[in-house]
Image 1 (spheres, rainbow, N blue to C red):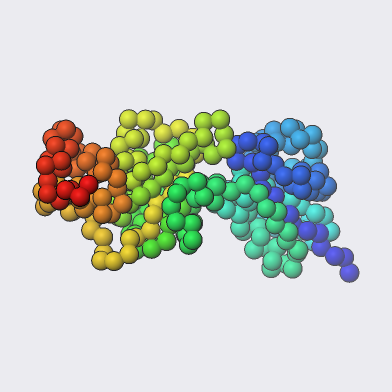
Image 2 (cartoon, rainbow, N blue to C red):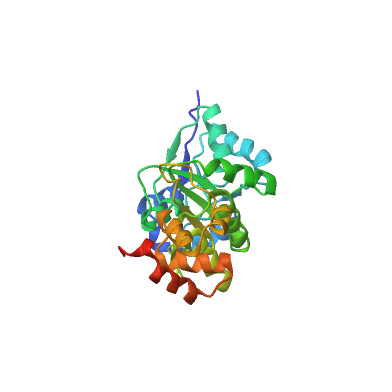
Amino acid sequence: MTQPGTLYLCPTPLGNLEDMTFRTVRVLQEADAIAAEDTRHTLKLLNYFSIRATLISYHEHNKAEKGPEIIERLLRSENIALVSDAGMPGISDPGMDLVRLAIEHDIPIVPLPGPNAALTALIASGLDTTVFTFVGFLPKTNKHRRELLGKLAGYPQTLIFYEAPHRLKTTLAEMITAMGERQAVAAREITKKFEEFVRGTLHSLQEHFSHTQPRGEFTIVVAGKPAGPEQETVNNVLPVLDIAQAVKRLIEQGSNKKDAIREVASQKGLPKRQVYQTVLESSLFTED
């Protein structure tokens, strides 16, 4: 009886081609075919490493047709390598569906380690890495997106999201509405020439990108819900507190003093200098 081939899950660099592993290069060289999300993008990678291979287009819009065709080739003892445009295949791409099909047909699956934007951003974020939840891209519809963010707001673990530059500002605003003030990091263009980590809070990130046009693909890392009494949404809390109390509340929720002063000034429509002076004179900050 003919033994099936193997489906290899091959990570590809996020941007810096030096992140390609020797093992991945070898597997791609030896594979009977490579299933790629974007064949033109993958061809550039293959050419860089002088890999000649048969490419199969496999993406979100043709997976129902191409998936069974790839399984048939695997059942004929061909070895197929699956690659994403960047990072791990199966993470926020249709690779997950091909893996499930392979499992259903008892086809061996070999995952190769390699680049992943979520973990790369997490370990450089400075936020808790003990327990975390990978969310990926939020749903496209407003209703489903807000429902999910509402559920995630109660999670105590660090949250990791992917987002496109044209949606970043909207997503940050929705996160603030659902979660209130949280420590957060926006990582963009990971491993590429213009790699950048913007660290602070959801509000300080929102302010930063109101003045700086978002460019490149983003990974957003957000602190989990703080332990203790349920955190109030900042937009609900600040208007009923005086200036010093509002600043104090934001600091207690994870903001540094500078970001807290900026946020209170924005919420109350006051000059930052006035808020800063009030904080200096307040008895709430005598220990500072």
